[in-house]
Amino acid sequence: MIKGLAITPPILGRISIGKVVEKNGKRLPEKDDQFTLTTQVQNREGWIPHPLDEELRQKAGNGKLRSIPVRMLFNDPDLNLRAEYSLFDRTSGRPLCVGNGETCRRYSPNGMQSLPCPSPEGCDLARGGACKPYGRLNVHIGDDDELGTFIFRTTGFNSIRTLAARLRYFQAVSGGRLACLPLELKLRGKSTTQSHRAPIYYVDLCLRNGQSLEQAVAEAREQEERRRQAGIDQAALEDAAREGLGNGLFEDQEEDVPALLEEFYPEAETGHADNTPRATLPGKTGLREKLEQQSARIASN
Image (cartoon, rainbow, N blue to C red; front, side, top):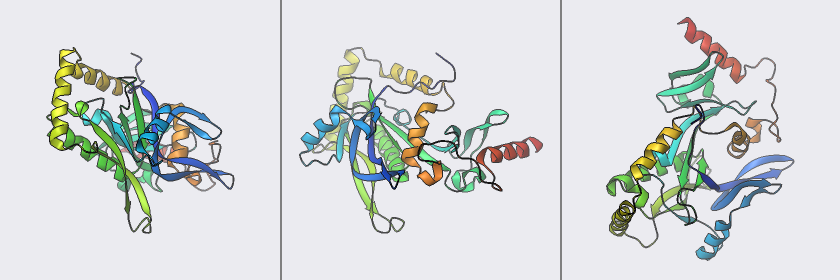
């Protein structure tokens, strides 16, 4: 295994609840009120829809895809959903700092450092919204590839908090059989004072429509027994996934970051529409300069 390269679950496509649109010559993120399943390929119009997208829409019957039947690949909630505070260098697009509220891994002029993470509210580098919670959920959809997943990426606190809670609750109530539960992703809406009473949408994880908790847990027990008799070693799969994810410092590859910044950060924050680097304005301290100053302070203490 190549050291320094995070080995992530195989990805067949993307799940999104928004898209990037062009307005007045600028490319800006725009939220939607439904799911979209895409491939990992883009053209001039955006991400190319995955064949499963149309199939699920036909089953929904109303044209709006607001629920997706899924299964988890792992019993461990933290393998299915990885959520961290993430800070990107907006001039180069590289991930600079990833933390969990206690510790962080951060690039510095002296190389990679492990430092305390005070969360974005208490971090000088995070001022101005540069650091956000960033979650990646891998789910299994369909029957074509037993180990292939679709990935849902989000910087939405509501989605991250809800998904994290649901995964832990379902894992606990099923006796650790999370990977065998029949579940579905569901889009929900809410209004807040910050949204000026307009609806905002987030992703929830629920039992499939029409199933009770007792039925779902019974099905999970039967599924686990069938897989055990077939020789499927779930524990070994999770050990391999844990080792692969821990093999790299950062999960996202550099070639994926520009599209990520475009989708989750307004253009005014990330730079020009084509994601070319933007020079630091005279008299203002850039992120890399802040890192150097902070490293110097740490070294002197």
